[in-house]
Length: 149
Image (cartoon, rainbow, N blue to C red; front, side, top):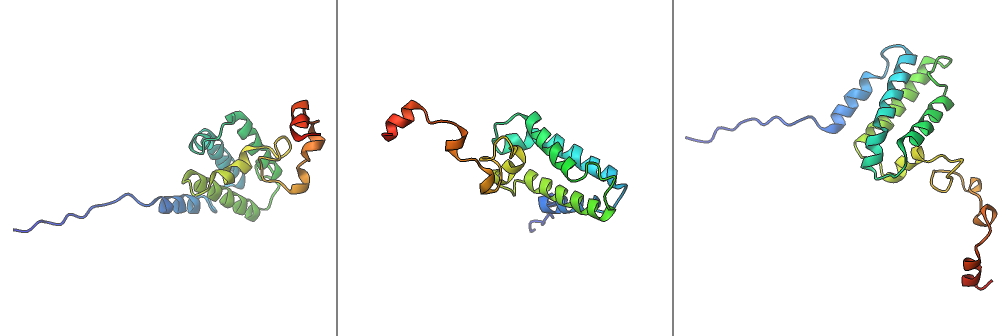
C-alpha cells in the first residue's frame, strides 16, 4: 500500500481577501453610506495600527486628524459626484487594507498620525512649511556655551 495524498486546503492569501473586500465596496449603495462605513472602519482600526506600528500617540488625537482628512474631502460625500466619492472610498479602503496588512512602513502611517500644523517635522510636509529652529525658540545658555557662542 501507498500513502494516500490528502489535499490540504490553505486559507486564502491576505491579498485575495483584501481584493475581495475592496471590490465589494466599489459601486454598491448610497455614496454617503460608503463614506460612513469607511470612516467607521478606519476609526475602529486606529488603536490596532498604533500598536502594530509602535506609535506612541493617543488614539483620540489620531482619530481627530483622520476626521479632519475626511471633512477636507467633503465629509459624507453628500455634495460630491458619486464617481468621485467611489474613487475616494476605493483609495481610502486600499490605504487602510495595506496598512492593516502591514504592507506600509511606519513612515507611511505617520502622515496620518501627526498634524502638520502642530508637528510639521513629524508629518509629511513641504520644507517651506517647517519653521527654522532659530525662529521657534532661543538657544539655551548650555547650547550657547557648548557651541562657543
